[in-house]
Image 1 (cartoon, helix red, strand yellow):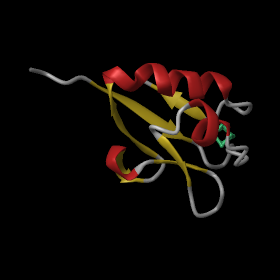
Image 2: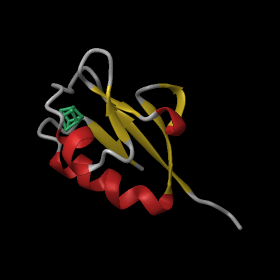
Image 3: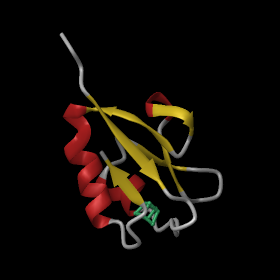
Length: 77
Ligand code: SF4
């Protein structure tokens, strides 16, 4: 069975650390990083805390966070 993955990234130059993504919309994928800005949770990271791949089944969660982000810092796909 092929498990499709979707790319997710956070632009920490834009992220204000408001917490909407990691506290409210999608704590399954996002967490608060050391600087208070958003990071991907370790299990989804690829190369660093700001980007990675999530299973297709979690795309809706990532999309909700991206839609809610007031500064459009989250990219999905
Ligand atoms: S919702 Fe956007 S600005 Fe707020 S913590 Fe998440 S990525 Fe940063």
